[in-house]
Length: 126
Image (cartoon, rainbow, N blue to C red; front, side, top):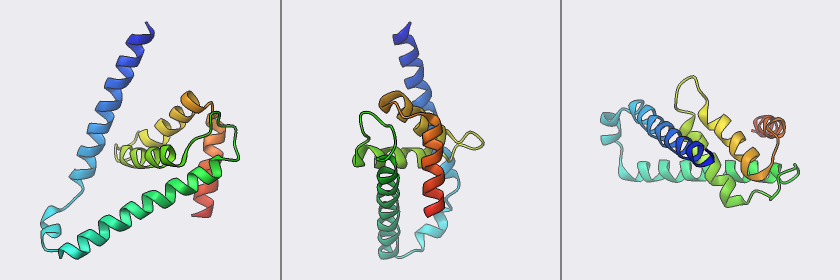
């Protein structure tokens, strides 16, 4: 029975990820991007990467003072931030927000209430 839930969870995760990519790309006007100089596109990509790294670092630093066991590493938190940011493109579900809290609860024993406090701390600092 446990294996069935894992398979269903993996299928649901892949479906949510595909939906998030589709919704994210549906909002991009590629005709406008074709007229943008390559240096600007490279700068935009660099700034998006920097944003993900800084946000992951901020979440990681704040999470260190909470009850996660084992502790969440910087790279893992940055990965969670990147994926949850993409999953939040799925309308009305906030799959990234809930998915990140569920993952931290399942893999690191971090209570959902503490995930909410961490989110509020990050939003306050931002």
